[in-house]
Picture 1 (tube, helix red, strand yellow):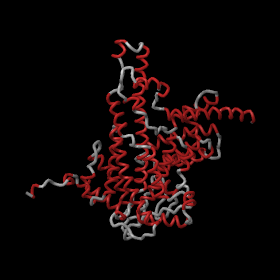
Picture 2 (picture 1 turned 30 degrees about the vertical axis):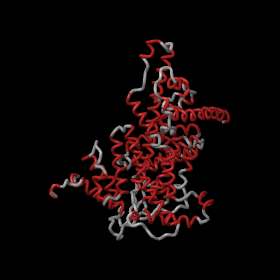
Picture 3 (picture 1 turned 180 degrees about the vertical axis):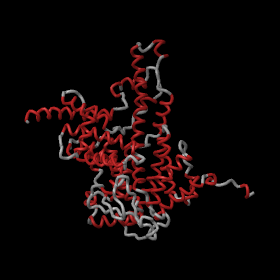
Picture 4 (picture 1 turned 90 degrees about the horizontal axis):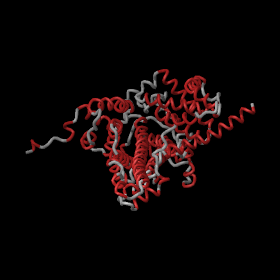
Amino acid sequence: MADHVPPPDDALLPGPLKDFIFDLHDTSRRSHLPTEQTTLYHTTFPTLTSKYFATTPWPSPRSVSTECGGDKLFLALYTELTARHLHTVSRPSVRDRIAGWVVYRNLFDMLLEHVESVAAGVAAGSTAQDNDDDAGLYLLPEWSFDVLHEFVYQFQGFCQFRTATFAAAARTSYSSSESDGADGGGGGGGGGSKKTPSPHVMESLRVLSDHRDAWAVESVLDYLHRFVRAGCGAPPSASATTNSASPASAATRLSEVIARAGLAYRHLGLFASVALSRLECLLGDYTASLKALGPVFDVTAPLIVPPIPPGGGDDPTGGSGGGVGVGGGVGGSGALTPLDFVNSVTPARISLSYHASISYLMLRRYRDATSTLGTIATFMQRGFKTGQLRRDPHSDQYGRQYDRILALLAILGHVCPTSDIVEEGVMRVVRDRHNGQLNKIDSGEEGYEDLFLFACPKFISANVPDYSRILAPSVEGGAATTTTTNATNAIPTGQDAYRLQVRQFTTEMEIQSTLRKLRSYMK
């Protein structure tokens, strides 16, 4: 009978959660109200999470689909938002990490397919818009940054997990073959003591081997570059060689694309530049890291204009707000340059400054590194003093990042003294914290490496290991053992990429120490 039809999935959802989904969908796809979305993203979502889902997953997209009219793009955003929460409160397994890749791939494919189709229509001179999909998309600047920042963070975590897992298995296999060799190889005793990696390590390797394309660095880089192109336009050099149109007409086309597809794509494009710079720095390509920031420092780029809600007066702020960050200091309806826009989101500003400074340091552009770090250190110091940064949910991360920045300034101030660049208040803190280590360096002891180890990012290797070395069938005295034994010198440590960058830094610091001695003789 009809009276006994099972209730829909959303019938068991709490009322506040239904309201949250409905309102978040409305602000992102219809009303585009920045102030309302700010409350939903920064206050309502954490409140509902702590009340209902502190350590458990949020409801599935299917369960909440009726609250957003089955909007596929919004449901993909909802999946990423809730999966990001679960990733932070639990220790992800290898399958969880691969599932995270699927989440981002589905979301990014949907976003990019939409904006690239709009761009193709604009390029063709079309004025028609899609019915539903072209309703436009608005995401807070902070939300846009969080999506891309978490994307790179999960890629970094996956690479570290993959490298560490393979290294642990390889070391176990090699130590076993080495032990067999020391015992004379044959005999009855040697075979019984043969070691193999633990079952959970072997299972992780099998899953990784079956999903070799998950988090492939080529795909990760491609997504970020496509977001940059979609939200910032083609680089000037590419435009000059492939398009005869003037920069003004290119900017007009970009503005038209953003007007049709939604301001979120402008946000995503600029923050993709920041995320790409961070990724290239983690991979050790410092020139590419700095080049990725080109759209942020492009003074000819169109300004970012905060959205005006339908009706003009629905927003309590007067019709525009634009996602001002904790430390942005930019408000009202004024248009922002790309750099001012990125600086309005504090985590983005810190990430940009930190990774650009690491790149400058490794490229021996010491004055540029000092200037960049000095500016962000001054900003953070004032934010801590006023309490502005301490009230932010990311305040614990800001504290650790500030400590790293001070350590980098200690290195730079010693290698390339530039008292005219950094404020005295910042340098005073640097001397108070690191004077002992710098005195050790002056006396001829090691010290630079300890500071760099504390301050540098966790560099990664994106290479996919040869899983067959471990997963090949074990044959007594056969090919699998031989492969491992012959690869003695190639046994990974799990820290190879990290140690390579540290070794590059310490080699350069040895040269700088010699130059410092020469300079002292010339005084």
